[in-house]
Image (cartoon, rainbow, N blue to C red; front, side):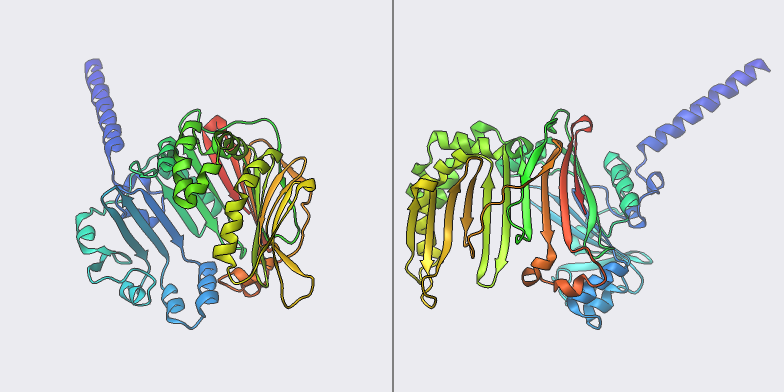
Amino acid sequence: MQMLKKITLILWLIWIGFSFSACSNSQSWSSVQWLPELFSVIPNDFDQLLMIDVDENVLELVATQYGETTPIAKEFEWIDTIVIRQKGSAQTWENLLFVQGDEVNINQLAALWIVALDPDYQSFELTENVQVYGEKALVDSKIYNGVKGDELLQEFWKLYTKSGGNFNFLSRPWGEWLQWLAIQFAAQLKWTVGSISIGNKLPTGEASMLFKDGVVPSRSDSWSARAWSPESPIHVATHGLTELLWLDKTLVKTFLPILLTQYLGDWAALFTDSHYDSLIQWLNGSVSLDVVPSLIGMWGRLVVEDPQVFSIFDSLYPVLDGAVKTKMFAWTEIESIKQASSLRRNTQVPIDWWENLALPLLSIDQTPETTSLSLLLVDELALNTSTQTYPGDTLAVAEVDFTLLTQLMWVEAGELLQGTTDTKLKLEMKSDSANNRIRILLD
């Protein structure tokens, strides 16, 4: 009897081990049932997935853009979920569209130019309420047995269940990039996940990028994102840009002269070796950009927390001044002014119909702390010395005020933002060096 019990125990352990082995090697949907339903038919060989949950908020957005009674708005009412799957290489690029919903007519979506319309594209029914759409040969070549669970899918599921986003993004790096900077970046990146919700009119959400060990920068000091005008609806600030993008100094000094020569011609010779060193240094410092719309155009200002950068812009000023005169405002005579006492260069155009009025088009200014480059300034807006301090783990911040951007939006801001008092969109990028991640928070 004792021997029988031992044999039974051994057989039971063998069966348990076999079961675990079978489960670990299985790519079936049963191992990842916690994912959204549509993932049960999507092939696992993807580089990127964009998932859209069509709820009342998305329907309202579509109705606002196209009108409630339009065919596009009516078709979206039948859709539950959309997934766009992509996979790429240096030779080919695969795109497949998955649509979940009863009574969805993909051909009608194609006829309305919502999805690609091509004679070689076809739709194929995978389940009672899921269809796939794409090039016929590609559709026929895939096995629709669903994705298998890995760290990327687990991270996506946690973010998806946490945020309940309308727009969700998953990405693995594609290793055959042609651009040298993208090669550097992709080589360090393991995966990206993101989720956005538009439930409160303006989107909120979060994204996370996982990198290899020792890649994500770690800082303990704080930094200031310079805010220089309350009239600015778009403000972006960053610090440590070269470190964040892993820009090797040798690579910058090798490739940048080639790029500048293509665009500036012989003027690229104005860039000296010390200029390139300064450029790398100020990119790794604090940089801010503001954009403002106006009745006659747009103006912007780039502010660098390094007064010595003025010498670079000052050397290149003839090139910038010439570009403004010959390409942007060839219709009028432009006066150039250099104010050496304040270390300022300014290109202005006189306004013929307004006596004693000149419009400042291109300005370069130096203060004890900064260098700023401004283009098409409507008013002489002084640089606001006030700053907002962020922790050292904050890599970048951005703010968009939609009440000041109505004239630039593809949807009228007033109509889109009805029923909400929040008209500002804020973004913050934070580093988590302990877990090799960079998080992007959208609020």
